[in-house]
Image 1 (cartoon, rainbow, N blue to C red):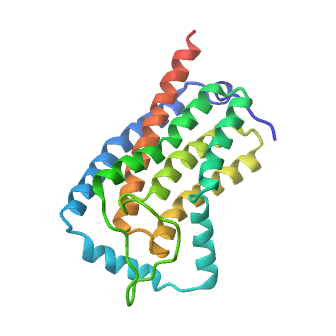
Image 2: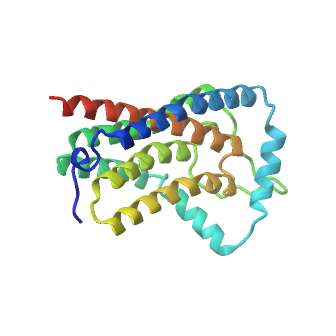
Image 3: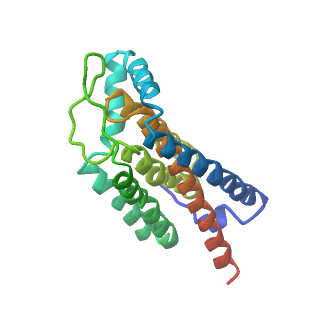
Length: 230
């Protein structure tokens, strides 16, 4: 598969400037929404809504759906969760995309952000009951936010951006981006469906993760712009 250098493929033109403006427009609303959920969850204002929405999603029983959602969550469990991100970083580095590799490392930092927020929130995870189903898995830490979702948005979100910039042939590029976006979109429902997180855990992770990813986009463009002027 052929690759292209992002500076030649995406010059700092008006289209690129629109990307930065869009990223900036995501950061503030995302952080405000995340902060709002933190307050409401700590005050236990959303427990009834979380339970109702979880039961509603879990009522959709179909073997194919269950297998698909379990497969989406698979990427976020060790050992694969500890092997796939470094593999992406190493691939970019060995391909001489050094800044892109460094940014991919920062994107993987979303996992650390998740750990820090969890240590502050300490929200109990869902517990199996008469109606609520929890699929057995090795889980730890607080339920809020969803570590899977936050890490996926950061790590695989950045990888999708890199795929869109670096892969030259149109078909492989579109397939790579579509696959990554599908995984990111599907991991949130999967965490609720499997009973590992509440819906507000997932929503908070999408908000915080999107803000973090958007901030990385802004930083990346600034660094690229500075490098192009040298």
